[in-house]
Length: 166
Image 1 (cartoon, rainbow, N blue to C red):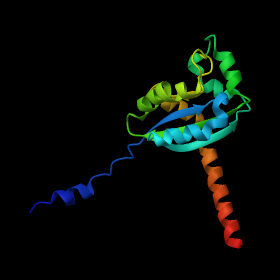
Image 2: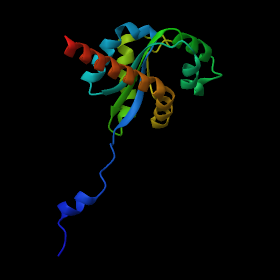
Image 3: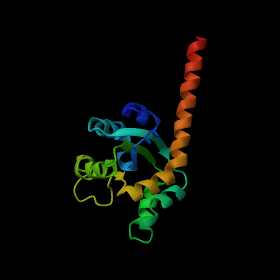
Image 4: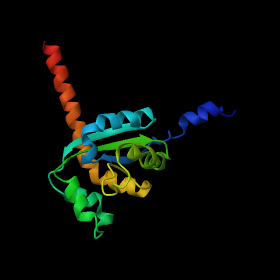
């Protein structure tokens, strides 16, 4: 007496969520049109996870994010530009190729739409270079993104509470 395939697979461990994540940062020079950029991303099939927007008061997180560029000629100017200005940090989710697909999309489609040729110092939008970089960058921003998600959930719960009292 054998087990059917259906019964055997029912006992196998379920596959882990196979979603891959990468990081996008809309920099200060494009912050005012972030909603338009996010709409374009969504229309092109990119899913957004946690999102944080605001002013980075300390350069520490920016320095951690761009650590691999420390010592390069543009590093100090980049850290200063990204600190004390509005930015939008977005976790982009998708299949195993999302890091490569999203980076190509940013470099080939998004940046050319919003950044004028020759403006090499203002790239407008950051996309993780590869999977290793995406994991490192997401780790740097994780606490900030998680706090933003929790704050959003708390605001939603509070709003619901106010609605039910009315």
